[in-house]
Image (cartoon, rainbow, N blue to C red; front, side, top):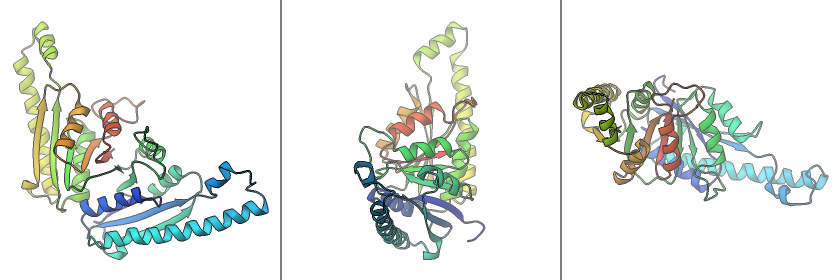
Length: 311
């Protein structure tokens, strides 16, 4: 692998839903500067034992488990080769798509986290697992990864519509700008369109409050505009330095809205964006929370777009 190539860990579970994750990656990633590691953690015994009177420790139970493990590995090996084929059809060299299958050691999420510690630029997982429950907005494995993978960006992929459009939520926080840097690092020379999206919540009641304090609201708005210009200028510079053309990048501001998270989701939906990028934390530096309030709400709502949560 070239030192400039990006290394991405892709957690797969053998489901058709997870193959949507693979197809998504084939659409947004440049094929000649990315190494993918398709990673699967195998269970140790079938779910059959949960609802059966068979003792897993008995000779009969052990025989069932052994045959199940053999069949499971054979099925997963074929599945992983099919996933690799999907990427080679998109122009990825076969040697750039690695396959790693292992027996469960601690737990599926913990094993993924342990593997992620061996040097990756991003971790990719499906938003839902093999048995999604409709009342849950995010699967249990994805939820655990979201909480624990604070050292590497996490991409959660749901029922993503085909789109090369990326919406990146920007503000004055360091986390936001790291999100822009991550886009440049991962897809800087790919055929994508990036929209820098800034939400400013200056509502009528805010203006009245400032006026009651004797503050000039026009000065407050001018200050926000100056901050916004600085954010956009820095973001454009980062993306262009990463190889993106100026006409691939646009900037948009909305003001006077009730919620930042709702505005981000609404823009992603109306603009048919396939990817939303958010910083893990916003302005707040409170260490007790592993994720900012706006990002947390976007995670709950962004069911129809891939979500990149950048540390």
